[in-house]
Length: 126
Image (cartoon, rainbow, N blue to C red; front, side, top):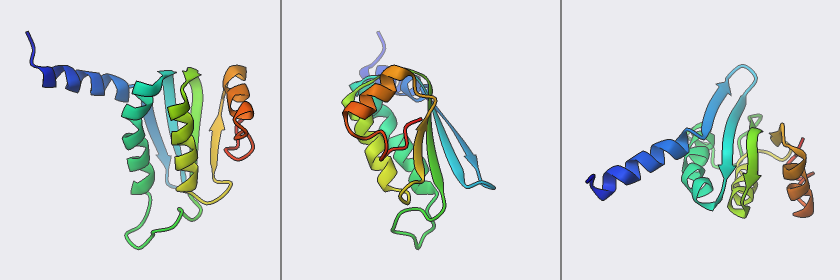
């Protein structure tokens, strides 16, 4: 039988496979590609990774939102989100300047979810 910490490590690795990052330094765009069902547990597990990547874009002297940098969440591989993922989106949008955060390739169900929450225009859902 494997120790508890080994199971925890495997679980974390699997959840991080749900997200891939692409940072285009020329266009100053960080794209986060998500896949699978982003339920409460998985959303919580990927949150630190997302915030870490966004915060890594800041310079040492920057404490405000990232000037000019854009963050894009590509949702083409996602068919379900929990409210905890909506919180990640809102928090991520606060880390960049207004209008520099967007969610792209959302299926109609996801678009409707953000619209009902009143966040479709604030988060630039496409």
